[in-house]
Length: 117
Image (tube, rainbow, N blue to C red; front, side, top):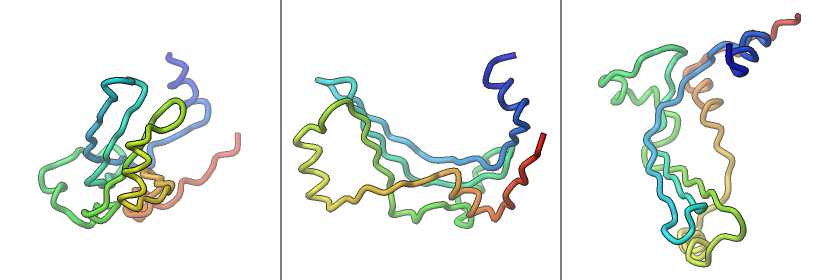
C-alpha cells in the first residue's frame, strides 16, 4: 500500500468534494522556474460524481463568478519587473482562495464529523 493510501486509511479520511476548473499554464522561456496559471470556470462536484456536459452549464455548481479568474504566480526569488508592473496596472490584490472549501460550501455539504480513535 502506498504511503498516501496508508495515511488516508489510518486517519479515516473520506472524500468531501471535488473541484473542476479550467487551467491555463505558462512557463518562463528564460527562467523555467517561473510559472503562471490562470484558473477559471470553477465548479463543485459531489464526492465521486462524474462530470457531465449538462453540469458544465449548471450555474448552481459555480464556485466563483464567471468573470473572475484566479492567477497563481510560482517563482523562486523576486518577481520579474514585468510581472510587478502588470500586477500594479491591473490593480490586482493578493487573496487566499480555498477552492475545495468553496466547493463544500457551494454544494451545501455538511462537515464530516471527526472520528476519535
